[in-house]
Image (tube, rainbow, N blue to C red; front, side, top):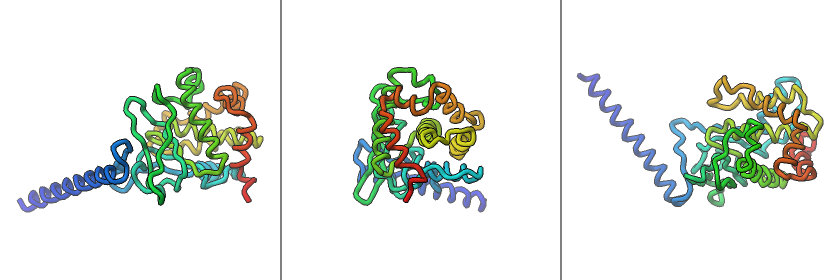
Length: 260
């Protein structure tokens, strides 16, 4: 009986604690954001799937005995679990791009910086972006137009030197496709897009939490497919209308060798 009472009291205590924490999150949302911004409860211990895109790829390359490719502390990737909390948890971004924006259920994802909320940008007004890691997805005109809007704007932001955060729901596939395209673009224009670089891009993808084994190989296959279609630079220029000079400027701003 004593054990049962102890178990019951513990259960009640944990339930009350959970309710208080959820209530606090709702209160934070009301105080900080207003009704149109979204606070995402990230659970006990935190589940933010954040990492630096440059540092992650460089780590994979270093493990293969290859030189680093990208500057670090420039572009981050995450799931949406950061929303409503400190920007320090996701690299202090100056601008955020929300690849998981759903036009039918709009949520504005954000982090809280020293000067207030940094709110994620979204450009898809008709459909939710999905399956960006498959080249055939880009043949759909609506999906292509919305995805390209993200790339055009974010590339300009990164090239301008702004710390940028890219995120989706899990920080895995849509964000993974974005990261792979960015990494492959810089590698291609630096004349380093070879089998070793493809392996490093895939290595970065596999560092993602919640990635299932059946998805292994997707980013490597995606970039290889684009290479067979004429190259990453040609793909981004022809598909999204991004000028080659802009892509070169972006590459020059991110190349590790160009670091002071």
